[in-house]
Length: 113
Image 1: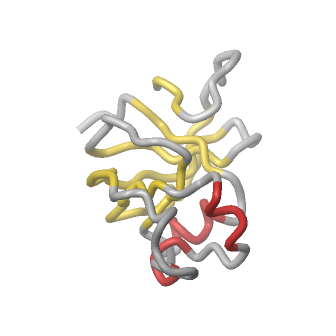
Image 2 (image 1 turned 135 degrees about the vertical axis):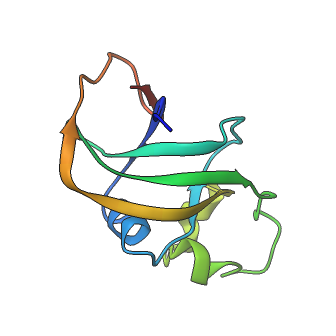
C-alpha cells in the first residue's frame, strides 16, 4: 500500500514511536486520517519511517494527572494542557534509508507525499 500522507513529529517523540516505546501521539485536535502513514522527523526533510494511525482517543484533559503516561511518555504534564488528544499508532517501523521529500510551505501537521 502506497503512503499518501506523512505526519510531522518532533524529536524525541519520533524516536520513541519508531522504537516501539510510544503508541499515543498527543495532538491538540482530532483527525479523520486513518491507515498507514509516513513519519517525518521535523526539520529533517526526510520521511524516516511509517506506522498505522488506528484512530483517535478521547481527550485526556479531564483525566487523572499522568493518565496514559505509559502510552504517551510525556513527563511534563503541562504539555498535556495543549496536546491532550491521543492519536493511536501501531506497527511503527524505521526505514533503513530515509526518504527525502519536498516540504510544502505552511505544512505543520500533515504532508501529502
